[in-house]
Image (cartoon, rainbow, N blue to C red; front, side):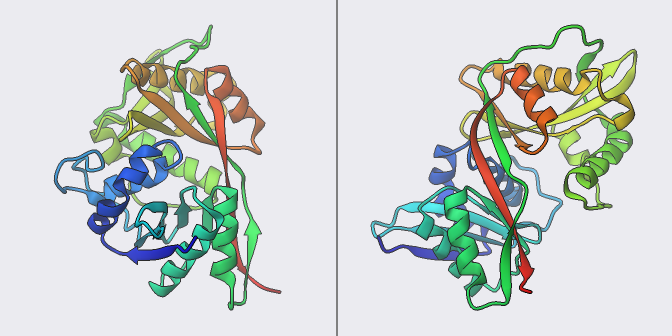
Length: 291
């Protein structure tokens, strides 16, 4: 089946073609949904336009693949952190790579379902002194109900302006721990102002944090789950995520989802214990010099 890949730097142009594809696949495309929503910034209200500009210069390019009938069968977002791919035919990965190569977008890594990722990586490296090196496997989890853990002291509350300094330090520690990257930009004040961040509090002390980003498709994505090392082992993160999930699932028809490092047995175990079930897997590669 002949496929045509296209790329653009315009979020509006991308959404005009890809929005129905994204919304119909809200779980698998949750990262792309949040990126397009934030990039749309203060555009006209709509399912992907929450009216909040992104503080990050990401993505640099959007891409999508059309079949012979003009239907979108795969999409991608590319920027300094790499490229995120939706699911799609394996040959769509090659079409996305060729579109982004023609747009002259530099990439260090790629992430997506294994089949389309293989096609993308092969086309991206073709004719270049690069090789794809496998990275961390990522679990995709969804919850339609939740189980609150027993015996954990404290309560969940919405984070406020007075929490910004502490939670920004924690968010930076989270990024360093998960990605090995030191960041200096503000990571939480916009999220707190938007009501996306909650904390778990014990006797007035904040001991854990989590965030939930709402998406089109009656979905929210849980992220930025962090407890300082000295406070771990007491169930605070489990309780915080469970309470946050229960809050969002109180809306009829709503779902919550999150990503996990499949090589971390602790996080996978605790999320399953509070009601999340694994529905998919994402692979990742980094593009390294040959030799």
